[in-house]
Amino acid sequence: MVKYVIAEQLIGKEVITSDGSDLGRFLDAEVNEVTGKLTSLVVDPNAENELVKKLDIKDGKIKLPYSSVMAVNDFIVVDRKQL
Picture 1 (cartoon, rainbow, N blue to C red):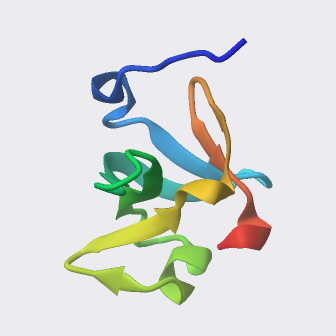
Picture 2: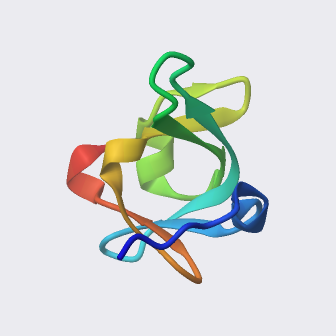
């Protein structure tokens, strides 16, 4: 059974990797206009995290591929291997 989540409920949720590293907080999502599918998460980065420093930061934000999302509950969990 698919569980639907309202995007508004995701704003501000912590985004962590599968090994517990805090990447930052969810800000927005990008959607493919043709297919309507999510393509990436836009995250306000945790500047103190060493992994974040290795990611591509543009305009003070990082984009994570939606395909890396493993779970959404109290946190948004992404697969570190896909970053």
